[in-house]
Length: 362
Ligand SMILES: NC(=O)c1ccc[n+]([C@@H]2O[C@H](COP(=O)([O-])OP(=O)(O)OC[C@H]3O[C@@H](n4cnc5c(N)ncnc54)[C@H](OP(=O)(O)O)[C@@H]3O)[C@@H](O)[C@H]2O)c1
Image 1 (cartoon, rainbow, N blue to C red):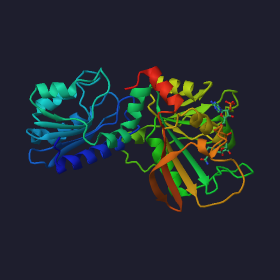
Image 2: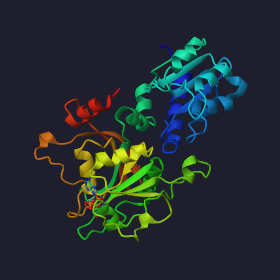
Image 3: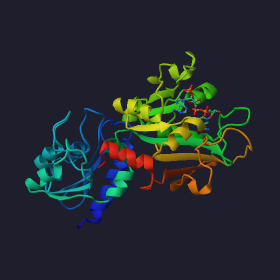
Image 4: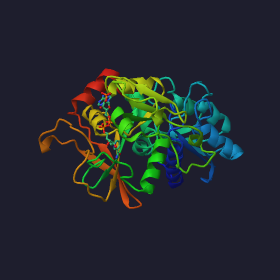
């Protein structure tokens, strides 16, 4: 496979474009596309519009116009060959006269598949699997989890002190972290379709769970929308006066028996990316069931010595059984530190193996 430096830098830009619309495209994938003219100059770029709107390639081609002829389209996901709410992207690429299409992730669904074959049949050169892993771990991750496991991707966010406390002994927990970390939480919420807490957090903190101060430009598709707020409240303890029940965003009060049932309920509502902001009890329930895909931990350089822990009982007694995670990102947010992690899943993980088996996997 031979891919030019211009195509690789266009692919990096396409991934970035996809990340820019994360949280606004579900149940569709957040795809990014860049069109290069025949001489390798970028002449158009685009990302998936909210459902019903144009796909990334179509937007990038529209920007490129005639300059796309003889050029290359660089896309994070294989262009679709089927007519859904919008026409097939393959036909738009053929009509635009591109000579070459460079793709990161082959389309995993049968419904939209066959794009590369259709393009090749029309005489277009197609490269598949270019920097595939980076695209899969980026904006396409949530959608791919949906395709492979029929459940939303779960990001667990928690803010704690250096000694792993999320609240003080008296229960107070406001402002564990500083303004930069709190603003980052709002940006993170904007990338998700739903924000989930347990009744414990709803009662203790009375959070509103909306996206505020995310510093999004007014034209950004996420600026006009709020994720679904979800409270897991099996015993009906949430008072009618709770802020989460105001009219600032839609809210679901769920009595689902467990995280698995809740995720099924959310998946059926087209939710593909969930932010778990619940307290230690709910976090432990998701972690025990292997249902956390990414963790975003905000650590404040403070010590409390007592108070609620970062996570509740995981049923682990020996160090050899510790749940291990890999650090995938480290950022300073004002005086605090953000650590992004992914739980290590190995083939010995019974729950993951059983679950994949049950849903067919890919
Ligand atoms: N610093 C932070 O980032 C942060 C974030 C969140 C919370 N907190 C702090 O955490 C504390 C609250 O902790 P918490 O553990 O009580 O809150 P939580 O985990 O949000 O809520 C726990 C409650 O969720 C309900 N629930 C529903 N389905 C569940 C399931 N499948 N598994 C487990 N629980 C389920 C249970 O009540 P029912 O049985 O009634 O349904 C349970 O008591 C507060 O002090 C809060 O300030 C801190």
